[in-house]
Length: 297
Image (cartoon, rainbow, N blue to C red; front, side):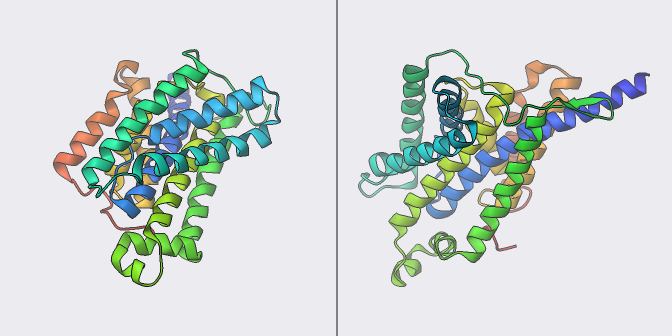
């Protein structure tokens, strides 16, 4: 009985870790999208997740808009927020350096957090699961149906991003700006437009992460900083700029966090990302999978 119970716990922790890790992976992908075009770390990335979850909650639960439409509206609105951030907080900077743009994203993160508290208050918001279905029993563990939505949508986004960067003109243009902005400009690619699109796309990814995880964990205004930290840890662990590395590292970080919470103590839940981040920076600063761009592998 003990072995059966232990096996059930392990399965439960695995799915919990993969679910949380999928969100970390999406945040890390958002970091990489902007970094690959600008070499800037956007520390407002976690706020996109928060805004995606909170907007979905208002649309679906407070206004009664069907969940399907609320999902896409929330992603679109947060993408608009990302666009506004670029036009008002990044583009006006005169002769910006990487450091000044990073400082700007930190300031933007603080502003977004304050706005979220002002608009939605400090109480957590809940959203109904995408599909009302009983938990799935797997080797004695109970897996929520929403978990499969989180994993499925995350995998679908990775596939969509791969196709986008490898087979669309805009995706190839963004990769060109990442490789050589000067040469890209000579062939008519607007680096400013690509940066704008990178902010909108990374905001959309964050919004999707917030929308799919809120039915499981709730959402409140002050979760952005920790999500950004853990997503940044996943981006560093996977190799900053490496899309597939970010996905693998996000899942790995989620699994480590889940098992540490289950077998050691929940007090160490948030410390795992910091420990992993520091360990990678000391032992392998380039990350476990280097720092190549999407599609270079």
